[in-house]
Amino acid sequence: MTVKTIIIGHGAREHVIGETLVRDGADLYAFMSSKNAGLEDLSKGKIKIHSETDFKEIIEYSKENKIDFAVIGPEAPLVIGIVDALERNGIPCVGPGIEAAQLEGSKIFTRSLLEKYKITSNIFSKSFNSMENIKSYINEVGEENIVVKPDGLTGGKGVKVYGDHLFSKRDILDYCQALVDQKASFLLEEKVEGEEFTLQTFVDGKNVIGTPLVQDHKRAYEDDTGPNTGGMGSYSMENHLMPFITQEDVNEAIEDMKKVVAATKAETGVEYKGFLYGGYIKTAKGIKLIEFNARLGDPEAMNTLPILKTNFLDICMGIINGNLKSDIEFDKKATVCKYLAPEGYPTSPKKDELVVINKEKLEQIGAKYYYASVYREGENVYTTSSRAMGIIGIANDLEGAEKVAEQGVGCISGKLFYRKDIGTRKLLQKRIDHMNSLLQ
Ligand code: GLY
Image (cartoon, rainbow, N blue to C red):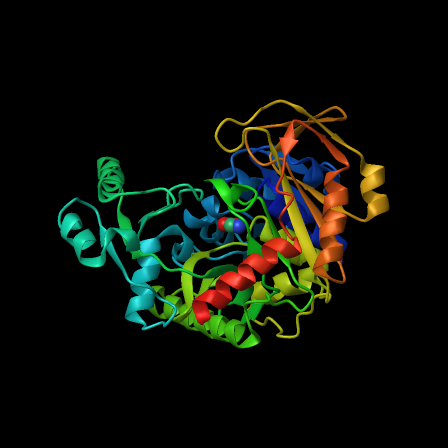
């Protein structure tokens, strides 16, 4: 019997989720706020273009098409309760309910939870919603040790770090004042130094199953310079670790996430089900949590799903039914994702520019490609104001995967740019040296 699934969302992450569902036998439908050409093709046109937070429409469309289950791609519908709304209407979902999705929706909720349940990956932080006591707090911890994090979703743009975006006590105070003026709550968090890694997991309420580690690159330009972006690309290694992250580190992070899942249930009464993204950093003091996301990563989903060997529909059903099996397998391959973005992104992106894709050559090379924020008119594809396409190389080792990704990038032309350094040995060595210098 064919399983009818609906994907909610319109980006490259949703494109790769849709591709994996179809690969493993799903009859795909897509509900998206703007048309993703890849999802349009994979679903053979069974799409609805409408707001991804209009639950009434999503429920109606799903019921009309007798959908067996929904997979929720982005965070915005999750944190306002899409799963609760769909499940009340008999549509099972891969994604956490509103209470559990607070792990992404509220940084204050997450830090308080970690503190209350004495979870060791926590870092020191204090929440504020006025300017009272802020000056004395900054004096106490030192301005150079501060990260300011607004409480709610900010699309990766609200977090400001001393030394990267804030350069004096005045800068910190001005930013805090701006948040107070917007009536926002926020955290002043301890700044930690180390190497970041992404651990994406499948969670069925109790079991937390890890997937290959990935490292994302947030800065727009080579050598980690320029403004922060949604992520310019990422890589994963054939042994599913990072050269600076050991299996013991991963085990520690998984144990940490299991405790968080149990604590979420104890605190809210709701089981966490869905994808749980752990954004961790390895420091001289061990593994620390930067953030949780209640979804897969973008670009990180493009590194892991294409090498998933286990049937993805079985994983989704395991999440929904609370009986996820632990023997989930991935190919022992390395992957490199390079994101192509419109020239000028993220500050002044060139919109409505033609993107020419040589699909035949991409196929010959064996590079995969996923549509992000581009639109298709007739046979042509055009840029919008965000990242355009993710190009993926998969091979037996990192060098091979990077080469395929580079060749794949060469099959796309237009007013676009990308980071040539992602997935290169040189950048990897820089990360290894950085970690070694901290651990000495
Ligand atoms: N790669 C960062 C994120 O998905 O939030």
